[in-house]
Length: 386
Image (tube, rainbow, N blue to C red; front, side, top):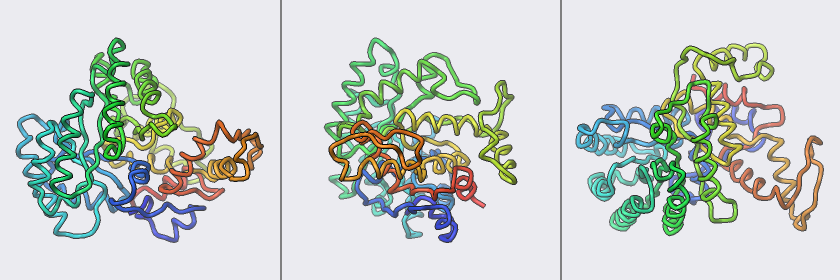
């Protein structure tokens, strides 16, 4: 699989200075954590779930979560599990390689039970999403995952969701973060990424952000994100990939604020794309993706297929970023120093910018590098299913 693999090779060649690399579900954890991109959630109750997975893979989806938790009613869990087993068997019978598939469970006991019930179709399973993760609650999940992996011989990853009230509340946040850090470090080889449950954070205070506001405009949420990245997203080898929060909206509501998309990138016929993005409330999503990146997050939880192309288009490394990163990491500059960027518009300081450059080249491996004259609009237009 590869990002933008759903578009014709000739189009891909015209867009990329360095095309997105290929990878499989067996690739190294470093590659897969960077490659998750827009992770699309789907209730496990959907009767044609196997068809949905195949369809979304054809539209460029790389990772999906099939949910047995908050997206379904408590009374539906048993039926949803049975449906999940049937749909995995159908996918297995079709052959081929689906997207990276994860199951969001409610309790640790579901992990070994589902892996056993999936049988040979467990080969299609990449791992589990672990809800409301804390040290106390998370350890049984990780122990269950490790046991299921040993019993099945199938490599399984965990994606803990950080969404508990203990993490949100100021008086318990530091202790909770410390416990989470110790727990995920112990199981480092199994933890693919950490996901942020911003909807649960808002719920604890009866809040819901409007479609023209980002998670970072809700200060109590922004503070938690900052602390999570501070403790769990460090670039010193102790950190993890942390993914961006879900964007809840996919149809426009009455707008209070002016659109957040400048006109200048959208020239000629692309003005229609700008209008469509605003009408479908995507300008707020685009701003939030940019803020995710600025705050150290990579990838994003998505609940609608229309959110995927913007996430992936904004994950592509620009030619300018790539040039800066290469200059900073040039072996001849191992001693440090400052240099003017090749684009002559900024300072590149070798030692302070090294971690940024390494992370940028890691993203370039899986999302590619745009040609010098290619911007977000062209990448978004190419990525939208026809």
